[in-house]
Image 1 (cartoon, rainbow, N blue to C red):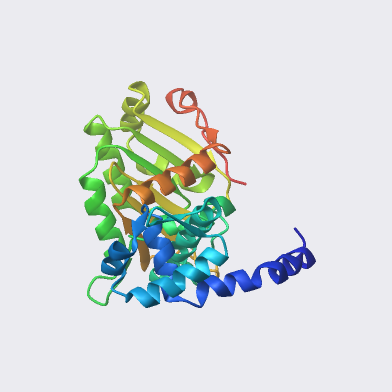
Image 2 (tube, rainbow, N blue to C red; image 1 turned 135 degrees about the vertical axis):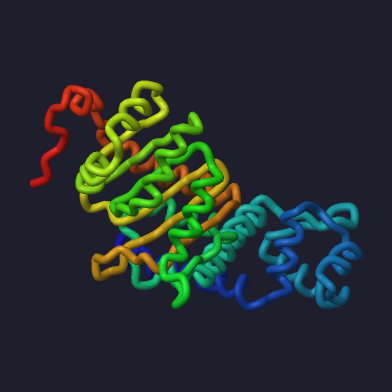
Length: 285
């Protein structure tokens, strides 16, 4: 869609946008009815508003065909239900961006596909971990704790941190599943660092999978059994070691799984035979 088309659409709907944004009462009525039909008494108790205030908002919503009344109860119409769910999505998105401003502002987001950026509200319950003057590697210390308490790990990264790589491979000793998607440079660093016998054991048991992603990936994503951790690069090209996102919420973990699987589609599976046969593994141009 070109810019002129977007401007035209905006002119068509700008009054509707104002209708949603201009009244706390109307928004709260829609959000309440999205949980199910209610009568006036229940709405008054739930919204802590007077009957006259609620009825005025109801009247305006009925005129727009967002709600209807039947047998003393108020319901969302079909268009009201669709609009309210989109409104909830916008609320979650803005809340997440405000809460996670230090993670996203001034950072590269090109490794996150558009469909996942649109669903960024899934990270609403995340916590931003930042370095302090007494713990300059606090983000990695927090991640290390989560890694030590999980069994299965998926890791997408274009950065290398020795301590956490060690913890990843300790998960293989727990008979956990470890799936790594790494850039060519980071994969080579891993192969230089990790004991080849650990790699062989993991590959032989099918508990270890390695994939190669494009060199221009700028992200660090770690998924455990019950957490997601996300780090980004600054717009100057350097990885930001001072800021990390951590979440244990189901919606955030599912969001992270979608991000991992998106990059998995474009990854090249690593051939362990080259390692076992002692042949050159990768050459970086």
